[in-house]
Image (cartoon, rainbow, N blue to C red; front, side, top):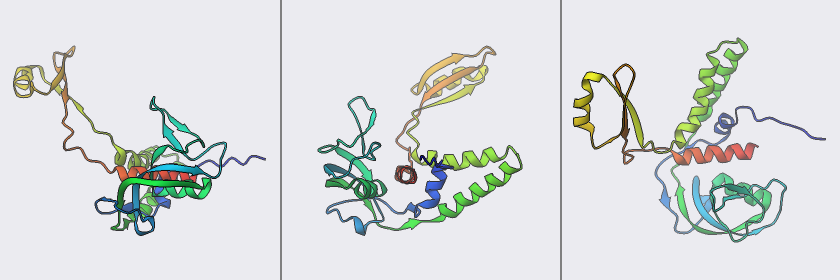
Length: 216
């Protein structure tokens, strides 16, 4: 028999289940001692896969950038975090060699557990009432993951009034990629946006994703 269990609100469920978000700055690993770290992000070389599955946990990106899930990974180098490594060791009995990576050892902030639970319960309440505001809480939960993993934004769009066009060009000509005249005479401008001040919380996004895979 087949039991089909759907993961409800998978990313929010992952945020509720994890121990919290890592605190502090990453440090370079000299000697890999996983039991001493709150979290880590490392590159490993797989030396053995003890257990094979029809749907394996191990994956890598091929030369075309396509992610391949396969048991045949001996000799491959992959990137893993704490949750991912624990799962492939536990469920597929993977053996590996540590290559390099970073660790965090300043604890975790567990506030996300109660916050995401509150958002989930509030959405459920309004969903039962058929109140469309429930979608706001759904998007809040989803963006809690998406915002952490945000890629650099290298362009931005502005709309300029027609009588301000020349002044705008004089002040921004080095950054303008496109300058389009709209039907009403105003302008749509696409500018280069520098990414030297772009920041995200990639470590948070990676751990949420890994925990969601553990739930599945």
